[in-house]
Structures are given as C-alpha cells and as structure tokens.
Length: 383
Image (cartoon, rainbow, N blue to C red; front, side):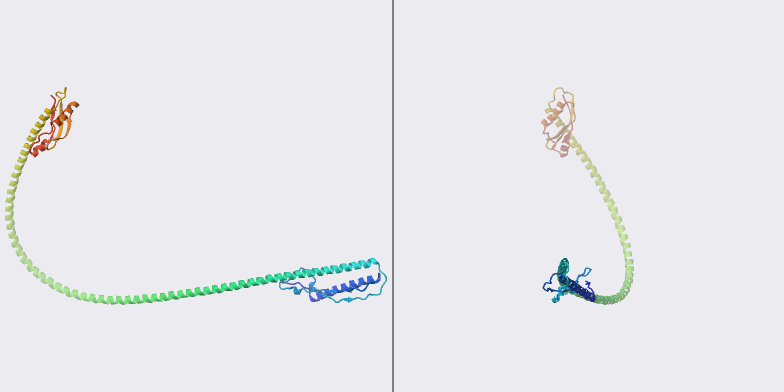
C-alpha cells in the first residue's frame, strides 16, 4: 500500500508558513488591543508546531498495513513566549478590538477542533493499522498452519508414494524373479524333454533295426516252412485225392444202397400211413355219425319231454315257434332264446317255461354225443 506524502522541503515550508501566520495574527491583535483601553496584564501565548505528517493531504491517503500508531507524531508545543506590551497607541474603536478578539478565539477554537480531528483520525488510523496488523498476523498464522499441514500432508504423501513405489518395485522384482524361475524351469523341462525324446528315438531306432533283422530271419524261416509245407501239402493232397476217390466210391455205393432201402421203407411207411389215415378218417366219420345219431336221439327225447311239460295257451293251435337252448354236461338249462317267434307272446313264453319245467335233461354217455346234444334248435307246433 502506497503512502502519499509531501516532499520534505514542502512540508517544512508549510509548517513555517503556518507558524508565522499564527504569530502575525497574534501580534496584530495585541496592537489593536493596545490602541484601545489600558492594556491588561500580559498573557502567555502557546505556539503549537504541527508536523507535516499530521496535516491531512488534499487527496485521500491509504495507510499501509505496517504503519503503526508511532508514525503519528504528537503535536509539538513550543515554549511559552512573553510578548512585551507595546506603547499605548491612539485608542482604536472598541468594536474593532472585540471583533479581533472574537476572531482570535474563533481561530483558536478552529485550530483546536482541527487538532482534535487530526488526533481522532490518527487514533482511527492507528486502530485500523492495529486491526490490519492483527488480521495479517492471524492470516500469517493460518498460512503457517496451512503450510505446516500441507508440508505434513506432502511428507505423508511422499512417504506413501515411496512406500507404494517400493511395493511396486518389490512386486516387479518378485514377478521378474518368478518369470526368470519359470523360464528356467521351462528351459530345464524342455531340455529334459529333448533328451528324453532323443533317448526314445535312439531306442526306437534300435528296436526298429532289431525288428527288421528279426523280420528278415522270420521271413526266411517262414519261406522255408512254406516250401516244406507246400511239399507236404502236395503229397498229402495226392494221398487225400486217392483216399477221397476211394471214399467217394464207397460212399456212392453205400448211398445208392441206403437210398434204395430208404425209398422202400418210405413207400412202406407211406402206404401204412395212408391206410391208417383212411381207417382213422373212417373211424372218425363213423364216430361222428354215431355221435350225431345219439345226439339226435337225445334231442328228440328232449323235445318229447318239453312237449309233455308244455301248457299250450288256448287259441294258439297250429302256430309254430322255434327256440334255441343250451344245456350243461349235466343237462341243466344254461340259456334259451326264441329264434323264430310265433307272433304270440303267450305262446313264446309258454315254450320257454316248458323248457325250464322239463329240465334237467338226460345227457348221452358218449362225450362227443353229449357235446353235440348240448345245443338244440327245435321247432314246436301248438296243438
């Protein structure tokens, strides 16, 4: 902050001019008083010297922060000067002396007010300077605390960064070591695999050579065996052919004889079977005919028994009704149904009632006849 201040020579001139003006006014006033009534007792006058710094400049000044109350100089009092009373001149008009006294008092009062105003401004400036200095001190203390905190945070961050960097470096070194170890292990494994492959290849080559030699020997032995076998097979084949021809002749003779015997036997068996079949067929037909005849006789007996048990309704004479009934092996009625109605419900019902009344029926002894007689479909004529 700049301090607007007058040059030293101008400050001295102003102070000197101000002092001289005050003395001139005082002397002129005394002269006028002496020309009037008899002079009073000499009065003591106090001359006040004001430093140029205490005179307010024309422009508004800004007080710097470092300015203190000590820069405001106190008013310097000059020593008391006894002004000798001059000789009494001619008596001036009384009104003029009073006016001068009033003006003098007014000027002194204005000067005192001006000095009081200057002192007040100086106090305010000092107070403002003190407040600014306190604010500046507080700001400096806050800045110091902030700087210390920033330094501490920076130091802490630096330490953390260093720790992180050390950890990262250690991690990188560990990864490099692990990679180098893995590469070394992989190389060792690859070398071991190459050696194992080479050993395996050498063994395989040796085995192939041994197998080839063995194969040559085996082929030679196999060829010799094949030749020997071919000779033996040729001899065996010749012997076998001769034997086969002899066997074939013997077999042909035997087969011819066996065939003749078989044909004769087959013809005899066929003739016997045909005779037996014909006899069995004749017996079956005879038996069936006998069963049918016995069954027919039994059914006629059933019909006569039903006729005896039949109560023919009146007015139905001459009407015909056909009924089918089924019996058990013991002659009991299993079922009965009208297959051809007479047209008269009473007549139809009476024949069914007669069948139930006539049961049980005597069944034939022969099973085939009994089987044939179990189902009958007779036709009855009302009489």
